[in-house]
Image 1 (tube, rainbow, N blue to C red):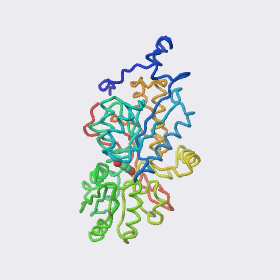
Image 2: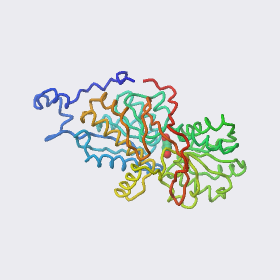
Image 3: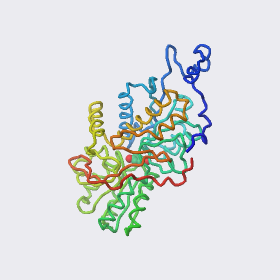
Length: 403
Ligand code: PHB
């Protein structure tokens, strides 16, 4: 893969390269001004566009916290330079995303953008990042397009494609002989693509989807859907909800008397970071995801301890994805010697560096999406425990990606 195809703005040869080449700081100062504050090197500016309000608030906070932890563990320096993080609240509102992304790039003049959580926001951000050549790290939003038809050398994802976590669950249920399933999800890109991932393994294995119920994002009025599900009596219900919506759905499910009668499953977002709020209603729920609290590997143990120590909360998948975004940025900027203009070097390092992730080793696909293991998990005493490996080294099909 070549970075040259999208190199429009990659050519801003930076100050550091000039110094290396022997250009005097004073002589070059007019060129260097944007990069160097008086008395030292300018900070590397990282702009986050993440939800700090609304139903996905705790997701945005977990990502930000853990990315900052990854930077702290490197002495708060990237390639020798200090860091400044500019945080913008996306509110998980796609109509605001273009303006907010432009604000980060053109007004704040950030060196790279990190975000978002919501797939609709991701579409707007990725469009601008592609056009401008701005480095973009996606620490959650699963929009398949970002590492599909919208893929770009300067766009990387440390999370998943929406298709990925749904796919193993279709196989799990089909292998258990479940035949009739209802799908229920927030009816936007993430919910629909998650459902498709499920169907792509469930239906060819003999399963039938008897009904799909879409709920407008971020609405949490589930009563009509629950009544319909009760009357359909499916073998299982696969749902996509996350954050505040997942808390409400799981509690409403139990309150409607469906718990223990019909199996409720989903991608792991249904029970990530929210089991305390869900309480007894979450117990026993099975999900599939690229992470589980109890993954018994040294990096996960040390990460969870450091996260708890720093923020007083348990880590979850969003924190892991944010941490890995921090590690990826570190790897890129270290390879570039802190030179944010040296994008080809950054990109090469980000494509090839093995990230020592709490989820275990994963690699970057040629479309810049994680190739990773997916686990079947179950909630026990509020903890998402590993049941077993559900799919090993699963790669998104990356339909339409050409780089
Ligand atoms: C998404 O919009 O892509 C999304 C949001 C929340 C999740 C997962 C995916 O937990």
